[in-house]
Length: 328
Ligand code: GDP
Ligand code: CA
Image (cartoon, rainbow, N blue to C red):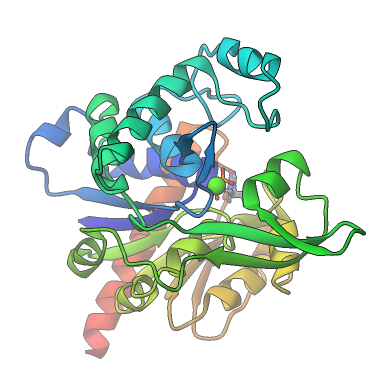
């Protein structure tokens, strides 16, 4: 089975741990030729340049989570982290102070900054970083071009666009968003290998990632959505019982005028893209025209629960792919 997964950070990475376990691909097996493979198309819309360093939060969360270096409780950043560099930067009056870049994490960013400055594209840099972390999946950025999600807010002083990270971290998404824009998305090209991986895939699985600023950003790179729509696509709802499981995806959905419900998110993703949609048992009455909806527990509470969700998504994809073949 060849599976493609467009992923954001925490939700995407956790789901990928389960999917990797189900498909039996791991860091050791990566060396051999396996029948199963997972290609992750990572969201880079959250990327930002701070302190002269290009920061790719979602790529790093996937890499650290699958590579065993993540801070498990937090869901982002390195385990056993210290923040001396951050304190020293603050002592120099360097802004912003709201972004938590730890000491261990800083090393990753120095490697990335050096390679980017030498002219390597982000996809090559990501591959180099993964040489250390061996995530057991192929991790590709959605694009090598610069795409940055900006949020149009009005904080009383008039409308202005701020970087997604400033809205998300500094303002905790509490400033009402009027619009969410992928700056640079229109002119971006899928990174090398992205379209080929989709074309060769047996199925595309959407993890429970933020539907607007994670999955939505990946789908916003011209060519990716169309390529995925030609495949069997099954998604896992990040919304349970009318609320995000963690994070503030409801604020993103509100900004684009989509109700925070499992059904509304599926309808927003569209029946041209989605063939199947897993919702939680709490949302068992969800019905979306043109999409096969199944309900089961969707909390990734421990590795076994996460694996079971991944297995259910794969099973549904296989079932729907077979149906698709019968229909011809
Ligand atoms: P981010 O980039 O770190 O915000 O992470 P993602 O975009 O990958 O994922 C965030 C989404 O994952 C949020 O909308 C959450 O509601 C969803 N999520 C987190 N944990 C779970 C879980 O256990 N089950 C489900 N169904 N969704 C989850
Ligand atoms: Ca993210």
